Length: 205
Image 1 (tube, rainbow, N blue to C red):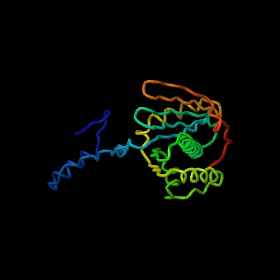
Image 2 (cartoon, one colour):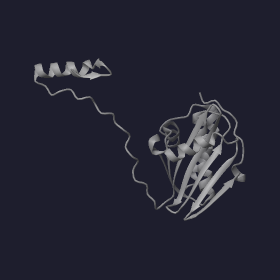
Image 3 (cartoon, helix red, strand yellow):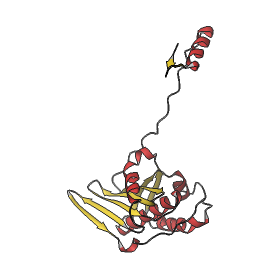
Image 4 (spheres, rainbow, N blue to C red):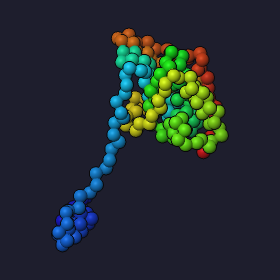
């Protein structure tokens, strides 16, 4: 007999009996499939990770923009209150703004919101009217890049951006904290003028 937590696990027991009677291979429980790692990133052009977090006490967004292996920005921003799709889309929009303002015209973007990334890649449509203007702006920004790729990754491969977004939920709406690392030099900035604003609450349900 096979026991688990003081009780009999009947499925393997019955499977063994049936297998013995029919001379079949023993039952082997299926292994859970874990998400595979994303494809290797091309470090010859800039790349970025983004994520948004909507919690009861507030919303935040975070992204990491790598201009090269030796130069990157970690950004977290308070986004007031809203919904998951709202903060993910706003964070992606702000990432694109930020990249363009740092002379990025080629960019690889990775995020774990399949809904948002399918909208951007025209694999599905957004029917939430309160998000359409933001989505239109994102598509306009996308058109300003010479080459841009937006790909989905699983959350377990997006830890850093996820952590930034959760930290950002404690920031006042509109506040940005930008940490730059260039080689061994590090800098920190607040309140970038062209993005220092509070975003209104929207309902995307």
